Image 1 (tube, rainbow, N blue to C red):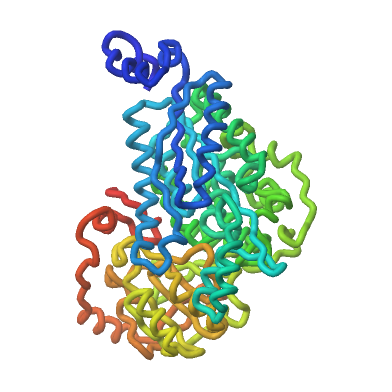
Image 2 (cartoon, rainbow, N blue to C red):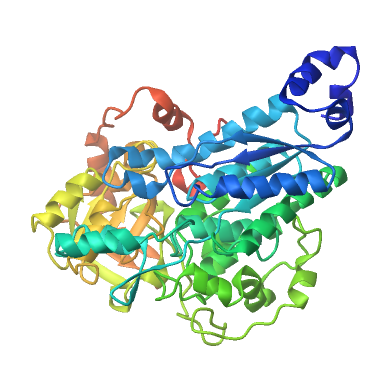
Amino acid sequence: MGRDYWEGPGAAHRRVIYKGVGYSDDDIRSKPHIGIANTFSEASPAHAHLRLLADAVKQGVWQAGGIPFEFGVPSTCGNIAIGSEDLKYELAGRDVVAMSIEFVSKVHAFDGLVMLSSCDNIVPGQMLAAARLDIPSIIVTGGPMFPGYHKGKRILTPDINVSVLSDVTPAEFAEMEDVACPGYGACGVMGTANTMQILSEVLGLSLPGTATIPATVAARIRAARESGRAAVRLAKGQVTPTAILTRGALLNAAIVDLAIGGSTNAVLHLIALANELGLSLSLEDFDRLSKDVPCICAVRPSGPYSVVDLHFAGGVPAVMKVLESMLDTSVVGVSGRPLRDLLAGVEVSPSPVLRTLEDPVTPDSGLTVLRGNLAPDGAIIRTSGVPEEMKKFTGPAKVFDGDAAALEAIESGGVKPGDVVVVRYEGCKGSPGMKEIMLSTDALVARGLDRSVGLITDGRFSGFNHGPIVGHISPEAFEGGPIALVRDGDIITVDVREGRVDVAVSEEELKARRSAWKRPAPKVTKGMLALYAATCRPAHEGGAMQLW
């Protein structure tokens, strides 16, 4: 906004408010104003420590000659809402986060931003805000949680989610529950939270080497303080996100997501970010890249390790060093240095958690784009989490209009080995909010059916989920996509190698069914989900609220 915004008699009404908070004329008139967008919450271990990190950020801002203004931003944890219809709020919440930061930052005319976050849709919401506002911005992530231990074995949050649906005794379950989340940080698997924290660094929005620092390690406080200093430097130099978030940076993020076996949700978030920037990124890019990028990271669900293990194997710099030949190394992030210079000093020792291109965890990419007569606009499967024998499966459809109905059938024995479960009307508009299909997928794992039963849906999955499960089918059922026309007993084939998802029904029969199909009444008619349903783009375009 410039210093004129705070100068002269016409700005007295602004200055008097800041003086009422305790700032001086010199603070207000001569120092860069840095907004500190903090998603601190006492309701999640991923956000409960962010107040401490925000204090360190503010120290860095003052040290570098800026003036910090902390403000709150809403945050949630997707694990809280499992089993509830409220789980569908999560993707729409990404847009709420972006709009909250946009609202406060525009009114207060900040010269720069530091944004603190940890969880699934919160980090990408801050990315959208950075792109929309295009003022100097940096993201400080909360870092991963250390794993817990139960009877000498590592235990992570997904173990609890699956055990709920298994035969674990109440006493043993209580023991597991007490240790699965041993402290602050994002759940230690390669779920959406850690995937997006990692991609924040890859995109250049976080300082190098900071994304995977465990939440409770002192280095994270030091990184937060340095981020505050960097924010002032960026503001003084007017280095904005559009100078950082180039198509090259977006493609780098896509490559890393494929290589680390990252969450399928990252596809939604990166495409939505590209749309916000007016840049090109599509499923075709992911499809093209996936043919050459193997999965090199053995973090759960692609292997037995945690993100903390990845950090001590070198973190994001080591991942990018392994992938250096595939990346655009000319990009420059918030550090101010080209990626090629940052990687020049990185040495990688191959380890079980981070493998080489020549000896990957799996030669398949972490994700595969599928198309076919069930998904003309595309679908996604997390290839690295699919058992080899299920990379091609064919079976009769068991159709359910929602995740809860599918769970009931699985628990009652209505789903048999060889079936293909179809969960529909859970897409962006139909759910609305593109619910994470966790009840039925966790039930399949708990009952040992994940090696004999496939699942397809127009919804999405938690980053915890794995198995022969296909999501993001587009067009979705609520828009009259082919998934809305599937009937019980139709033969469905998913072929990961060929990138196909098809139903063995003739075009003539599908056309007849389409003529008889009627769009169901909206599930929600007021509030933020109704607004989201009215304005969101389809899944293959990122699912964000956009009117253009």
